[in-house]
Image (cartoon, rainbow, N blue to C red; front, side):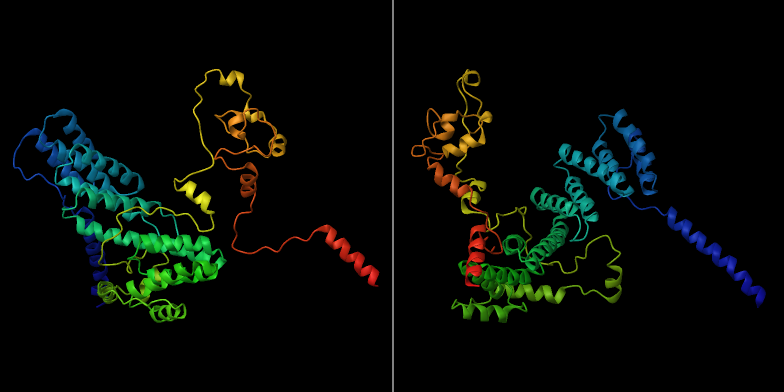
Length: 441
């Protein structure tokens, strides 16, 4: 028995080693072979390169494929050879190899946009960035790139067989991006910076309505508007109404209804389409086990189990909006509206020689005249609204035609803040108070 038991161990070891070697040498079948049975030299080179790709000899395969492309420039297998080079980089994996694969796939789409494999190439580009996507609280660059590439697949190849898979990947990606926006908004909300928080949360619920935490984002958004003052009551009521209408199975529906009734606002009816969609999502959502919670800490990729399984993902890129704390005049100028700063083209070629340099004006002179600072590309007279640039306060205007005193006063106003500041006491008031106290004693 002892001898037989000792003989078992080497057999097991040899068997395991054979299995490992067999698994390492197992061929991974290539997805886009050429079924044409011919012994043409270019076809022989292509078949040899595919055999090397299937066995993991990627560098040798690329040398063979480049030989085919450079030697047989009129071959019918040129497109397949170029695609095989990209596939070899994709299979090799790693940051460098995936970057090379993306460049090769983009070239293939550019030269062969009508081929069936063009949609597959775009799907591989989307998958390259999808595999490198990080968690919501980390760098979002790969997630943004993956969103752009998956959206490009749906726009350029809407009838492709890869479109449904790309649509689901797009939902997963937008779940990660929305989760990151929600974390950022809640950071500002807990800090007390409600304009900054609501700017993030409002953009989130408008851009990603399929986000699994959209109802919670709306609840926090309404709370932020309530804390910002009575003039934002309409926005808070709108957020409560969206919870009741678009997310009827949310935990905040009853509270939102009570808030609307307290505001004397109408309570909307639940949307039946939204109800059916939310019910489907809750019933088909994957639940994480105990092991998944433990191993999730060590995983590089984000958790997308809560992502939507139905609905149309957002097909437009998320653009940052202007916070409510920005003054309306500045916000309108940033959005493309009117501004009190203009630029003029100098038609007089002697202006640089005959006119004084606006940059040499002392700040004190501008302050004494009450005018706006001169603008490059205009004469001092145009900047101050007078021909001679004199310090007459009654006739001085800014570029927009408004009195310079009012423009300067509006410019010098302190920016809006989230917290009220106590007014500073003057030194004379303190001295007077001390003198009154001494006299009373």
